[in-house]
Image (cartoon, rainbow, N blue to C red; front, side, top):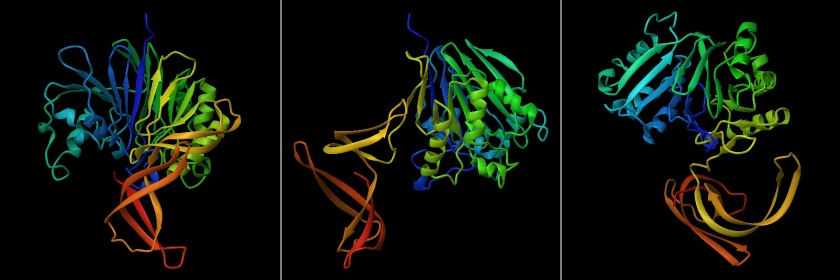
Length: 389
C-alpha cells in the first residue's frame, strides 16, 4: 500500500494589504490564502485574502461525490483575510458547495461570517450582492477549543492574540499535521500557551512573522503580529518539525524576507519563508517534508550552456564551491548601456551572447523599456528593460 499524501499550496502570503511592488514579486504580493488537499481528497482552504482569486482561476474541484464540497476556515474578519471572497469564481458556480467556519464576533453577534459576506458585497461597496453567488454556502460558528472531524481529518481551533479576535487552526490528516497560526502576538500567557498547543508536534507550523524582533519590541508592539524569532521559540518548545514564516509585511522586500529567513535558519533546522506558488508535500518518503518552490513568476526561461562557478551552503550547513555548466536560465530584465535614446515604454530586440562549453551561445529576447537614466559612460544612457518574449 502507498503512504497517504497531503498537499499544501500557498496562494497568498502577504499581510495587511496586497503589494505590486517589483521588489516583492519573488515571495508574492497577494494576501493570505492556503489550500490543503488531504489524503482522503478533502479540500481545505485557509483564509480568503486576494490569493483566493488566484486559487479560483486555477480551480480544480475536489473529487468524489456528486456535489464537490470544500471547507473554508476564516481566521478573522480583517480585510486582508476576506477581500478575495467576491472575486472567487467557484462561488458563482451552482454545482459547488462550500462550508465556511469562523467565530462569532462580539461586534457582529450571531451569523458573524455571513454578515461579513453580505456587508462587503453590499451597495455601494460592490456592484453585485451575494444573490449572484449560485454555489451552495453553509456557515458554521466555531470557538477556540473546539475540535471536530471532517472526513478522516481532525480540526482543532485555538484562540490567538490579535485585535478583535483571531483563530488558529490545526488540521490532523493521515499524512501529517498542519498548524496555521497567522496574526498572533506574543505576550499574553494564556494565548501563548494556546499557540503552543496548536503547534504541538506539528509537521508544518505556519506562523506570523510580519515584524522583526526589534520592531516587535518597539514601534510595532500591540499591533497583533509576531516575528521569526518568536516563531522559532514556539516551534522549538512545541516540537514542530518544520516552521513556515508567513504574513510578510507589505513593506518587506524580497531581500528583507531573505534576511529574515537566513536568521531563522541559524536558529532552527527546518524553516521556509512562505512564497506564492510554494507547495509542501506531507507523507512523502523520507524524514523531511518536501517543498517545491516556484520559479520567478515574471521571468522567461531559456536553454543555455554557459560555464559557471557556483558557491553556496549544503543542506548540512557546509560551504561549497564547484565549477559547472548552466543549462537553463531565467531572465526578468536588464540594465543596458546604449548610445541611442529609445522611447520609454517601447520595445527593444536584444541578442545576448556568451562563451559556453560548445562555443558561443546566443539568446534573442524582446525587451520593454521601463526606465531611462544617465549612463556611467560619457555619451551613453542606461536603459532598463523587462523581458517579455
